[in-house]
Length: 354
Image 1: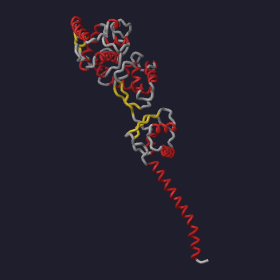
Image 2: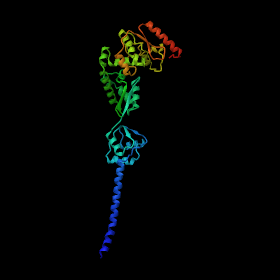
Image 3: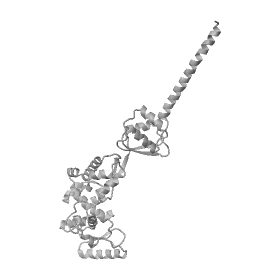
Image 4: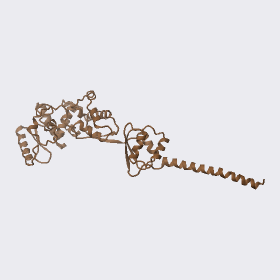
């Protein structure tokens, strides 16, 4: 057999082999590109600069995938699933996650695996009851208001920390706090207690309270009354001084905001004689001394107004007959009656009768 014929036969035999090698290389290249694309190409939708994903406690991987799909965070869920499997993403961490537009699957999986949560702002401000505080917090964290209320009113926890059901609202110092979305109610309360301790330990507050022979909870209670008497920080130390003068003299506080709280009718704009008869330990027209606890949260400005009250001889005060929000102060009942009659006439002219 000639050499030429032999070479032709060899060439013919090699063609299928070369074709298979080429096919294998093509498949390998396609597979490698597919893996690269799945891992490194952007897969988070760009319809929003930042996506917020809240993963409830107890969520498994299949539920997480559904969340990502329902929130329209992913462009391609199949590639995410492949990368998650490749990276052995099995344990889902709960929490609130900020996911940036254009992230690839690798970065997203790493972010979720690490549990890199973003925080939420918990704002405590101007609430009348612990229930109101719980309801407000429940709007921004995972826990519902009922579980928060149950924790905030837990008699054992309160007693361990020196509080009662009546004084429990004084745990909460009005401020803005950063919390993780899935913070447990007990952990949230523990943090609030630490913030409370930090607050009273600063700026000589504990020492100033002791000088007034009042506990921090009693200072907070008086501050809550001042809080409801005026929105004007400039006169809060003067009003605080009035109430401290009454306490020293053993007088009834006769604070209208406590009467509103005793009646549990927060629509009252003008306290009338019928409101004053409400039999409640919070009615300071009937019961001497401070009420059993705060009638609302007290701002830092109001707390410090009590601690740094103005020293004076005023015993009475009454709202001025204008829209300034300020008050007229008096040292005698006669002087106060003059101011009060002016204010009553001003209210009546405006049709404010209740």
